[in-house]
Length: 527
Image 1: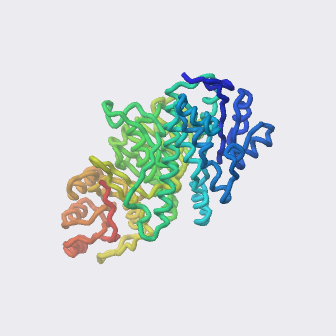
Image 2 (image 1 turned 180 degrees about the vertical axis):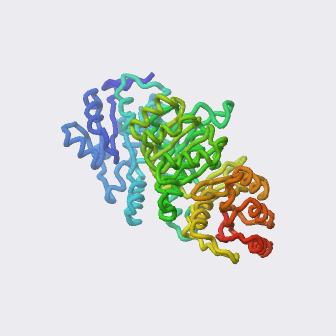
Image 3 (image 1 turned 45 degrees about the vertical axis):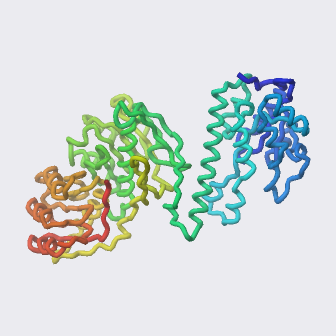
């Protein structure tokens, strides 16, 4: 243990803290408590002003270095009197050198960095962004973290109480050092991403070197299976509707719960954004099983949307994850009675509904989430020894130019159902085929190794409900077999990307069988 709560430590040395922060949360009270424990405080700029105005004794770093701040504050702590005091190993050799040069030790470094990411986020001019690249701060943090055996390094106000303890363990010092390096690493990555994106020669999203800053956001009992350790990580400063959701009832989330809830919420939000294309249907309900939609519906209210989605596939929805686009009332909550669900995620859950879930369905995780904002454009998937990275498939319907390629035009209702089915099939694993009718999925076939098998599964799932439905495929038809299968069960319109060699044969089959076909010109593979 190393003692840090008294004015003097080994060899009678006075304890000094250097405090220079952009985030001033709690810093004045922290400095006051350090002063009460006999610490000498060094500071700079705005932090110094805040501390002194609060009546706390402090010295400016320039008084210690004997050199004034220069270059508009760009140079103030880059000096041997600062870094020597931080980096010196607390042993006679190094301490003797400090004494020979009249340099005192610095035993605590409390620094967080210029608000670079915040400056970028508010759309500041490039010159302002560049000026918010901190140089002295990272240097001091890294110096203190390297010498953490003798120096406490604090980059987060949440850790201020650690420095006020009588003793700080070696393990705690090491934790703070790791946190400090993570802080500077994330900062450097944000600068790299900005400069890369600002370059005219490099693609914004996929540069030659890609840094992924991942911070653990949640612990889970295990991964996909009990023998696999697992955790949930946040990418940089990004927010996530599921990662940041409020759990208002039920058990802690599992690894698979997070994955399925994220998939359900993404489709739910995409359909909710198309409200103008779904007249009279203010509520969306999406049921997901193993990351695939298994029941999707729109309706005038949440209760009805849930009942329609549930009835679309009562077998698959058992043990599933459900997302809805509107607040869950007590009436809507009670409509889930009799169906086992793992997760329910909504933008709001009334107190009465939350209390009912807690009493009647204590194992159901009930989440309140916000719409996704600032979602990363990157889709990252693991490979052995690396990652496959692409831009996220975010092409909206309005970016397409649907073309009717058959003699028969879809009816107005069929157009609505085609658009609904297209959004749904985009979120299903390839090969995927979706049948829909009147704003409800009546049959889904996903994850098949051939398109006809996906269609056969969707048709079997639909049964008699296929009559009068529409069909959407996330990729083109290599043959006319899907068309003929669809016609045999009463499908009236088909939506697919087009672009196959046998498109003329496929179109001819539709004309022969009286089916409408629309080409989108855009596929949506999801592996």
